[in-house]
Image (tube, rainbow, N blue to C red; front, top):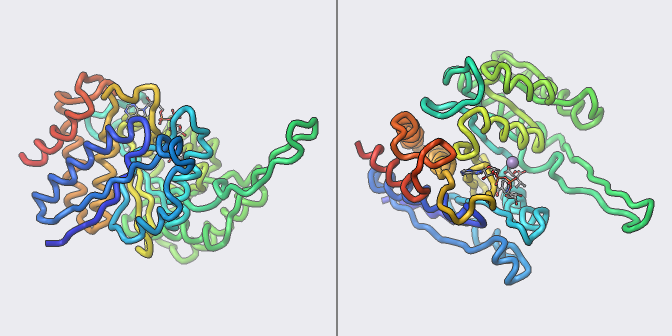
Length: 353
Ligand code: NAD
Ligand code: IPM
Ligand code: MN
C-alpha cells in the first residue's frame, strides 16, 4: 500500500484546532481510497520561539525535505513580532523549498454566504496564481539613522526574469489546460520598474499561448471588479503582495476566511509542497473551538490533487458543499453553533454516504 509522509505544523492560535479536523478527513480518505498516511507533528511556532529563541530549528528544512507534503495551520501570536514569527517559519519554508506557486481557489460553493447582491455560484469561480518566492516579499532593505530625524526605511521588491516568467508561464499553462481566460494583475502606471517588467513578461510569454484569452488589470481596478463583477475572473496571476491582498478579498466574497485554502507548490517536486488555510492564527477567537476548519479541510483536497488523486480532492469539495447546503453542522462564522471538532466528523459522514 502506498504510504504518504505528511509533516504537520499546527502552529499558533487556531492553527492546531483547524488542522486536527483536516487530519481526521485525510485519515478517513486514506482508509476509503486504500493508501496510508504517516504524520509527523512538529511543535514549531511562537511558543517554541519563546522557549528556544527560534520559530523552528535551524535544520528544519533538512528535517522536512523528504516528506510528501507539509500541512500547516497558522503562525503568529501577540507577544512575538509578526515579522519574526512569519519570517522565521512560513516565509522561510515557502522560499527555502522554492514553493514559487501559491494556488488559491476563490470559488463560491452552494450554500456559502456571499455578501454581494445579485451574484450566484456561477459568478465566483476563479483560481488566483500568486507568485510566492520573491517580489515585494524579497525582504531586501535596510533601516538607517535610527532614532534620529533622518531615520529611514528602505524595502525593495525583487522581480527576477526567472521568478516572473515561471509564475506567469504556470498561469498560462493552467488557463490553456482548463480552457479559461487569464487576467494579469498589474500596477504599471505607478510602479515603473517592477510592474512594467511584469507586464512585459506577461506579453512575452503570452506569445507562446495564442489560444489563451488574456486581459491586464491594474490592482486597484481589479479590487473593485472582484466586488462589482467577479465573473470576469477565471485564472488570475499576481505578484506576491497583490496576490496576498486580493485573496483575502476573494475569501470575503466566497464564504469568508473559514473557507479559503491555499497550496504552496514546488511544481518540479524537487522540494515538498505545503498546504494551508490562507487565514491567520485568529487570536481573537483562538481557544474557544469556534474556528471554522473548512479551509484547512479544503487544503487537504489540494494535497490530494497534488498527489494525483483529483477525484478524491473533488469528493472533499463536494462534501464541504453538502455540509454548507444542509446547514446542520456549521461554525458560528457561517451562522451555526457547531464546535470546530464537530466539522471533521460531519465531513467524513458525508463522504461515507
Ligand atoms: P486572521 O486571518 O488570523 O483573522 C482575520 C479575521 O478572520 C479575524 O477576525 C478572525 O477571527 C477571522 N478568522 C480567520 N480565520 C478564521 C476561521 N478559520 N474561522 C473563523 N474565523 C476566522 O488575520 P489577522 O488577524 O490579520 O492575523 C492574525 C495573526 O495571524 C497575525 O500574527 C498574522 O501575522 C498571522 N497570519 C498568519 C498567516 C499564516 O500563518 N498563514 C496568515 C495570515 C495571518
Ligand atoms: C498569507 C499570509 C502571509 C502572507 C503572512 C502571514 C506573511 O497573509 O499566507 O496570506 O502575506 O503571505
Ligand atoms: Mn494573507
